[in-house]
Image (tube, rainbow over the protein chains, first blue to last red):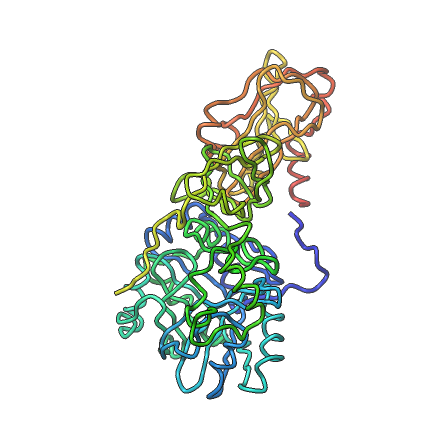
Length: 377
Length: 128
């Protein structure tokens, strides 16, 4: 129970007191004390999010505004994604790549118009990412770290109805739309997106209004607070990557099965090819293929198959490794993802995962494991 | 506050032990342990006939988040495991003292007498 392996003092989000008052179990995560679960527990919290709406504190994530007429072109020098043509009011998934084509972090970029790009990065990577942007972009645009904003996520089939009560104009938003709206008297940046596979919103709110907004959202009968434990099982069922586990500095976007995120115009035969770190490696991986790929895995047994488990073929030869694995409450079965030799990446391929020295049969499966239910209008 | 029945024996690793009339032991995990583990989704329990040494990791209890070992409180031979608990792991969360995990014939009765009583276990978990 003592996970404090760092001497550095733990940081707290503006919702720390609220979490404690709601009975959360707080754990260290990416340098913050975060709620892993509330008294209901992970299974109920997971199922509540799938059936109604869950409120998540993701204020530990990094929020940055890139400002200036050249911001989009500048950001394109760091990501293999079309930012220049990202419409105003739209958000897009992107990746920071290193010189070897490895993934430094995954992020969301939203075009707020007037030369303003709103960027959200992972908590564990934010210092690196901010330094990366300051080093490479500050000559072309302003890199403003929004340290005084909290980030909430409202996720689930009732999220749209709840948000419409607070801000009727959000009813028009579809998946990946963004808007600036006033909630609890504060200017909030909203995107219709999330990390659960459900419809929902991420809401950037001034830190001093975060608790008021969280309490307002929790006052709606459909909304319950949800911890990081259920956030992980929800995103895994939705087939979404967790940086540092399913993606890292040594996995390229092609190996990570994130080819869909590489905009056509930034590929070798596109209108604005390359021009970002690792482009040569990415082009080679697209053209030549890769030796290993990220896949979904369904254990054909009740035992959870977890991160680090070796994957073997019928002859017992090591062919890959599990990078995320847990019990999927919606599936009522274990789910996992991992990397396997590309020849074995086809859904339906039978492999085994080694769990405590014993082979557990697993089948390569397409993701998402649970259908995504984004609001596409 | 966790439920710690006074009629049972305990270990520092959060197993409970009920000494049956015939001297055999019925073993589970404590209410404190199930609370700390959270939602339990899988149990791997030792088979009847397996010889265990004291403190041996002999079973696995998995919550949504993680797998944890369960240890033999004393040396002995496994008599039975609880198939009902294997089939419904959540029963350990519902009532940790009804959902026993396995039964053990202890090698030495004296080992059993040396296990913690409820007061000692309560003091143990109060420190943690």
